[in-house]
Length: 377
Image (cartoon, rainbow, N blue to C red; front, side):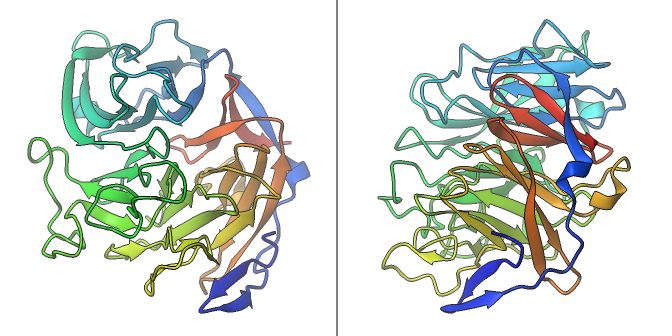
């Protein structure tokens, strides 16, 4: 699929040549870190010097792994506010404030149990126990109505600029019946960029692409997305990688360089990856840097660029996976903006997400309850 990626540009098929030595899958393995979780969806390490790993459980809990052990008591339990009323609902995202060590702020994205609408809220860690959040400290930052039960997005992450990025799907159903993807005046089908600290509930960064325009909502950073389930920033370069779940033909990885001023249109629903989907117009569409068809998987899970020290041959390589097949792929970009990639390994996991610790090491999250670390064989 990706050893010489096929990209459709202005109706022409362009073959991008291989540019780097392929990572040898037999040289790498997945080592179990912890097991026994309930539908884990995400992993993150806050920058507070403790080395703790925080893991989301879809029913509504945040769990802590400390010194290699899963703590019995959750850091936060939101099961009364959220819950799994549909496969794509629940507690979906977690981000720690860049100043978490000082202010104790962290942010969650969940679908509300009562109606399925999206909530992004800020909580604060307890004053007397660093392993427990204050459940009464919730401050709602963002509320978005969801017309259907799927395509809720859910990823939240702080960018290198210190702003909070929020991923939202197109509102659900199939085929984007309300044409939200190509309407940047709605918050659906987008990635948002907001400042959740300066003003309550949030401020709009002055350099957002639509802040002084009637062509899009001021919160919108990028649009034309179907369901950007997971995205991540390269912790060294600041580049943004967006994995967008496809409709019925293709899954895709979109790329936004660190020097972008935002406003990219990633094409949905005029395009599904580089394939024409509808009869609309999206002349400014930015096509994916990698894609694969339904013969190779059915739901893409975005990952991270490796920046650790234990696997030096993987420096700068981006990893992603497919939820249905368990395949893990690699993707590499050269200084000439050429892309190459391929399969790293086949697994029997249902990979719901990846995680990355502060040292740049990469983790794989299995819906069955396990957390694995990418290691040398």
